[in-house]
Length: 121
Image (cartoon, rainbow, N blue to C red):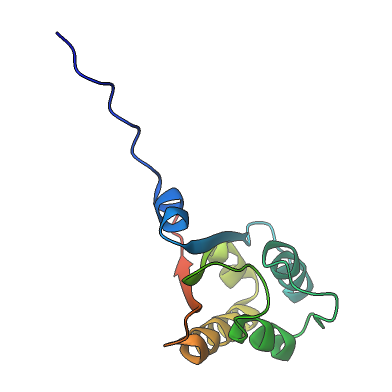
């Protein structure tokens, strides 16, 4: 006698979405420079046309829960390929990390929080 077929276990991303989070993956693999990072951020984070593709504009966009993907609890940004980018552009990577950390702190306690996860691959 067999029982019901178990449901597949959801991926972490699926579980986060089901719990009310927006999840986006920012893949920096192959990104050659700051301009490529900014272009990928604009696309993945659905940033508005006014996004200036500079560090201040990225900080403003990430720090504003009204900009980018919307979900009940906020946004989880998974950054992949960052090790390669960090080796190629260490100064830009350090600045990007500072911008991510500042935006997370700025949205701490908001209804639409921001969490940045560095994926290891």
